[in-house]
Image (cartoon, rainbow, N blue to C red; front, side, top):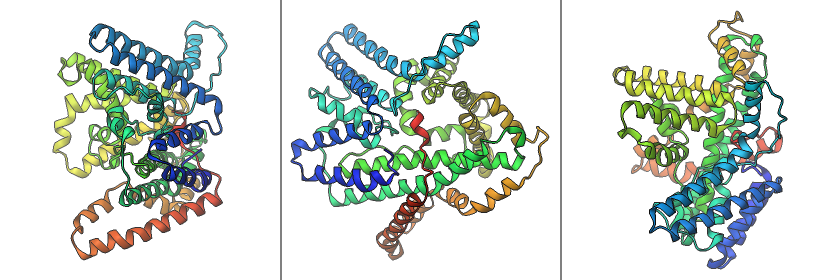
Length: 470
C-alpha cells in the first residue's frame, strides 16, 4: 500500500487515526502495531512472517545483550550473533540469486537460480533491528522487556518500507511516552501534504519521462534526449524519496513521533561531500556510526581511511541492490569523496560558487545514470550518448517533445529543489507579510496542492515508488 494511494489516504489513514485517538493510552501502541502489521502484510502476506522473524530475533538478542552486559566478551558475542542473524536474512532474500549468477559466470557453471522474492522494505527494517540491538549494547537505549514495543519500533508503518531509518536511540523514549497537540498534528498534516505533492505532482511526471527514455536502445538516443532522461531521473529519485520521507515524518507527528529530516535540499550542494551530508541522511549516519567509526573513521592512517571509505561505499552500493551497477555507483562516489578529501577539496573551495555548484550537479547526475541503468553495458552506452560519442544526432523530436510537454513540471522541480520558501519565511518571519504568508497563504496553497494530488491520482494509473525495491 502506497502512501500516495487513494486507499491509504481515504480509508487506511482515517481509520487508524480515529481508532488511535479514541483508544485509552495503554492501548495506543497496540493499535499502531496492529495497523502497522496490516499495512505491511497488505498485498504481500508472506513477507509479514519474515518481518516477524526479524522482530522476534532482535527482541531476544536485545534482552541477552542487556542481561550479559557486565561481561564484555559475552555481550560482544551476542552482538556479533545478532549481526550475523540480521545480515543472513537480508543476504538470503536480497543477494542469493546475484551470487549464484556471478558464481556461474566465474566458473562456467549452470547452478539454477532460486528466484527468491525479496520482501518489501527488508533493507530498512533489517537496519532498524540491528540499530536496536547495537544501541542497547552501547547503553544508548534501554532494552524493551515488552516484545510489542520492539515490534512497534521495527514495524511502525510511517517509516517501515522506505525510511527514514529511525535509530532506536531516537525513539526509545517516544515508544513509551509521547504527546500530540493540535499544532503538532497540524504540522504533521502539512508535512504529509508537501511530501505527497513532491511524489505525485513532480516525481511521477519525471518518472514517466525517465522510464520512457531509458527504455530506448542507446543507439536511438540523441544527445539532448539522453540528458533529458537522466535529468528527469535526477528529479524523480529526489522528489520520490524525499517526498516519501516527508510523508513518513508527517505521519509520525500525527501519532506523536518525531523523526529526523532525511533530506536537506541536496541539489544545492557545492561538492559531493556536502551532497552526502544532505542526501538520505538517516542511511549515511547509520553507516557512519555503525560501520565507518568502528573501523577507525577519520582518526585512522591515510591508508586505513581510504580503506574505510571504500568499504562503507561498497556496502552502501550493495545495500541499494544486488547488481553490479549499484556496486559501481557506490565506488564511483567513494572515489569522488577521496578526490575531494585528498586532492581537489581546497581547490574547489576557491572556485566561484556557481562553478562549485555546477561541478557537484554534473557528477551527481552522472552518478544517477549508474543507479538507474539496468546493466553496466547500458550505462556505458547511455554515457556515450550523453557525451555525443556514439554518432547520434544532438537534437531529436522526442527530446523537444518532453521539454515542451513537461516544461512546467521541470520548472517546478527546479524551484522545489531549492530552499526558497524556508528562506522567504525566515526573512519575513516578524513582518505582517510573513504572518499573512504563514497563516493564510500557506494553508490555501496546501489545500490547492492536496486537491491537485487527488485529481492526479484519480486520473492516472502511473504511481511507482523507486525505493520499494530496496
